[in-house]
Length: 287
Image 1 (cartoon, rainbow, N blue to C red):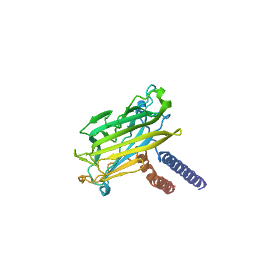
Image 2: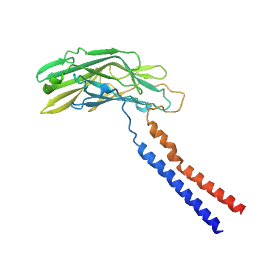
Image 3: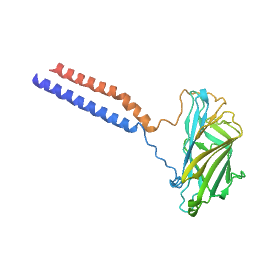
Image 4: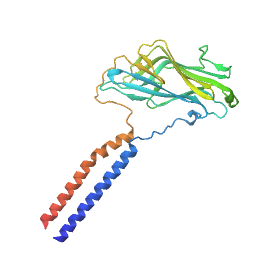
């Protein structure tokens, strides 16, 4: 009988240790994956130089009660090219959240996108495309140009290293002509004003860079400018989808992987305890 009690105690101690180890491992993994770090694999050439100012800007396309929302983050700054320091912008991948039972949005595009830049050394104009609205570069498109799997960058200008000590003002502007949202079923709809210009002006004042955002639109209907953002209300009716799931590029893979282990803890512990009770009962009946 004493030997039997010792065996029971050893089994129970083993169960407690195993259960504690399992719970600790899962909880530690959950803590580390709570805020997963996303590695930016943007090409090295698109890293903005920290010796000059940068400015973020967010584009939000919101369908309201339909539930679909598209968020695009941009950063304006100077490209460190060792010889030249052209100013420009690069984007992050789109964050797309599709509404319940709505056709998935896959990205955004435009009829035309124009790029403008300017730079001044003191009172002397180095170049200024924005003043007379002559674009430095432009691109036409009739398809998705920005989605949750892609990002892009554009930098223009010829600011030399020797110009940096005299640089007092510089800016970069994107001008969208007929911004469009593209959907999984092949349809697309224009959103916002016909012409939308978004940019930034860096001005040096008393050895400090001041950031001034540039917002211009052909119409303010369904459009709202924030401090460093623009929100476009998408008013077109999004077609219903056959599925009942919400396709989104968030949460991250790491977060989704941890949902099952955390919720499975009670099941794992219950299974172990029931197994032990079953083994002990079998041994007791045999004896």
